[in-house]
Length: 161
Image (tube, rainbow, N blue to C red; front, side):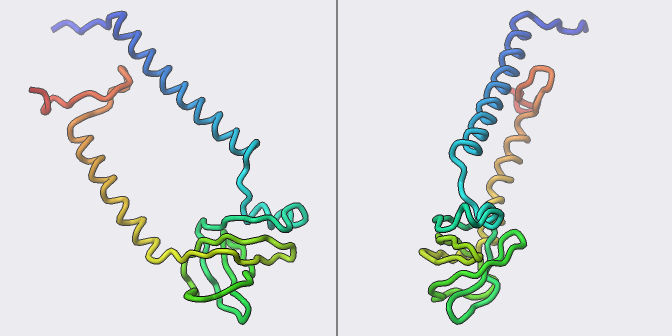
């Protein structure tokens, strides 16, 4: 059985698909660079690196932030290995809980609490949310496989009617 020669139409579609992926990747890169340089989100790490610049800035803290200990006038949080004191109400806040905070940064460094949210069972929710994604992947790859030469997904032979 002779090998099937690629037609010009097949080559054009393969080139077109590769160009689509490259254009979308460039758009994603451009949006990421725009966010970094023209509209950066102020993070706790940025405030700790340059306290003079960010003194009095309102920031949102939520990435892997845990309560270390409860104090008389507030509590301490840990984020990415840094421990910072938060001054404010400690209602319903306990050690080792994940929290999201809206705070005002003060050089020193310490934080003035404006709003807080306790993320109960955060790790469990993340683990449970992965199950449907894995289920969809299994169903998809049982029916389709990726062809690198054509740069597209094709049906498996067992699925064809």
